[in-house]
Image 1 (spheres, rainbow, N blue to C red):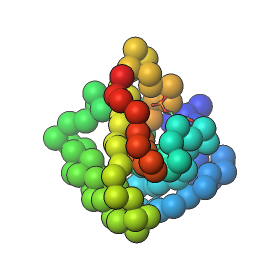
Image 2: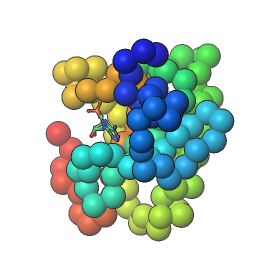
Image 3: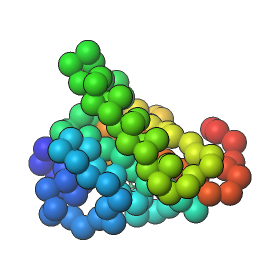
Length: 111
Ligand code: AMP
């Protein structure tokens, strides 16, 4: 989608520090980390947010969680938090579905 920063990362038009890629999913480190380990896992196809998950695309979401589990294992993350913000009031700033994976040390309380 035009003017979507994460679509531009998928297309290689904006650089990113990639950790994983397959035909449908990309994972890369967050540019402004909020924890010692902070990466994002996104579908390559543009889905606006968690409010747009349907029976048509939910298998992709399950696949994303498989990748999160695999990456947590590879990165030896004993504990980690997965967050997705859906909508402006929830703090979503990039309107392309993404799952924050935060880890490293003791994480603060949820909002
Ligand atoms: P959210 O506020 O939940 O929509 O999260 C968007 C996240 O994307 C923020 O944590 C940003 O730091 C991150 N972000 C924005 N642009 C980039 C980029 N070019 N590369 C990596 N992370 C980014």
